[in-house]
Length: 193
Image (cartoon, rainbow, N blue to C red; front, side):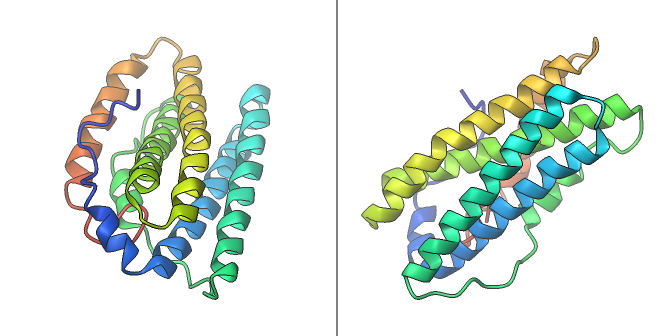
């Protein structure tokens, strides 16, 4: 369904399990960044009422996820660490169109968001099926459906507002680019690392 070209090696979970506080902190900040991205889509596209409505819902849901992760951090006696740069996301940003029309930039921003949600969904699936911590396995299983839904929303809006552009071809370009990017990751205890 997600179309990812390069799956995550399940052994990535072995790295994650060595530092659960780190993956939880990174995950919390990923949720905050996802909420911010949805809000930025609202700010930059206020005339698209349907998009605004759905982005506000996604932003609220992402903040709820942030709170859920933060609660797990507290329950386990950890402290939310400082936000760190997400190099994976920064690498993906390099592929976003910066020129062209406002619509060109919107489509790429939506595909960028869909890409991150797709990879996050895939990582949640890997965690839910491979982590030894049963509570976290269930938690990531429960979040997986939400990420898949967000992925679909972003992709569908890119197609809706594509205005005659070949959005599916551009999505394939994103999938190919992301496969090159993700090949450099999977070696650290971060959500996309």
